[in-house]
Amino acid sequence: MRKKIWTIVLTVLIFLSGALLGVSATFRVSAVTVDASVVSDEAHAEAKALELRLREAYDKDSTLFVDSKKAEKILEEFPYFYMTSFKRSYPRRIVVKVTEDAEVYALSCLDESEEYYILNAQGEVLGIRNTPENRFDGEANVFLKGLTVELSSDNRTLQGDGLFAPMLAMNTEVARLLGGVRSNVVSAEVYIRNPETIFCFTMREGVKIYVGSPETATAEKANAAIEKYLSLSDHEKLTGAIVVLDGVDGLVVTYQSKVPF
Image 1: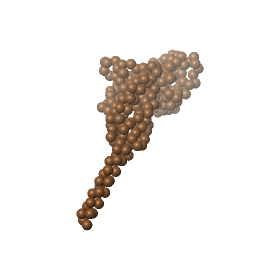
Image 2: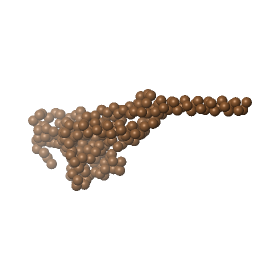
Image 3: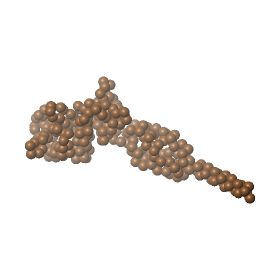
Image 4: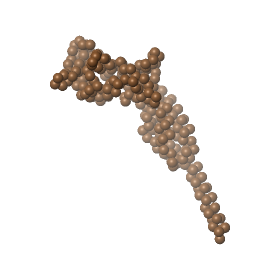
């Protein structure tokens, strides 16, 4: 009787092993598709390289159990892409959707290599190039000046200047108010006029915007500056300056036909 029981147990185990092997073979990953929303020519080649890396990483994994962790790790090697979805397409395919991030800012590196940090709208480093032009359309990125920064160990963020964050915050607010920043702003520069800090925005038409003590009431000052900018006539936008300063009773916003600084 005992021998019969063992025979049944072994038979069941063999059957289950075979079934599991069959299931494993049926759902073994054989293809990874990268569905990439891209704009630049460079991104097309990067998307193909990303797909190859993902195929290697998920080769022989089971679609029943895979998750996005490997893909997220590999995407760190491709800073221009961020993942929008990760899906299993049964029985043997994975589909990873990614989108190319947009270049917005250019900032000179500290060294003498004449290279530029290329940043997205959030101030994250997308790459380092010897030209500040946007790789999507060949037009200029918004040039950030007067900041002293260096690349952090994560190769994605910049550190070393306490004015970088308020500059980015003001640019973000300007972009929100104008529906983007590249179409209107040529450059954003930091001036130190002790004891005050001043941000200077050079607009595409020619007029400049000076914002005093931008570290405080950043969004309020950006709103005041852009409201004044939008109120100018086409002729006024060609020259002169908008000046936003702290006053005794609140912000003082003026337009001057001559640049004051």
